Length: 147
Image (cartoon, rainbow, N blue to C red; front, top):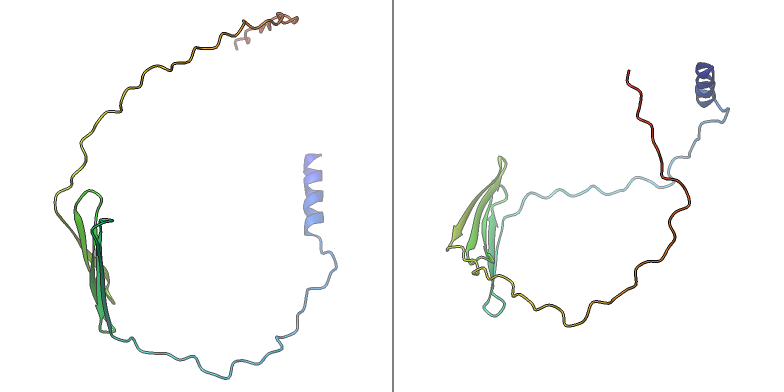
């Protein structure tokens, strides 16, 4: 019986509903009259840096390219007092980076949190709950039978 019901549902789902396939007209605009420009890689070079003692920001980036090989480096002042310097090279073979660190990591000395005194307010005294015992009997389950 279950097989018959399942087969019926499959037959209904796969039946052709008789609707025609949608057909859409071709777009009403012509192909573009221009050819997309293709430019060869251009050489470039740039560099910038920031050194702000008040906010302790100290970072820089420089990069240059001859159109085929790109080389550069950047440096960042880390929160632990070190400076991270990354020197990289990117070409047709991939990206290779060399990461170095200057300085010694410094962390603040651990100080345990201050202990606070107990609160000055009194614990509220609530009366014990006054509700009647349940009127239904406690459940009694039988142990399952062993095989």
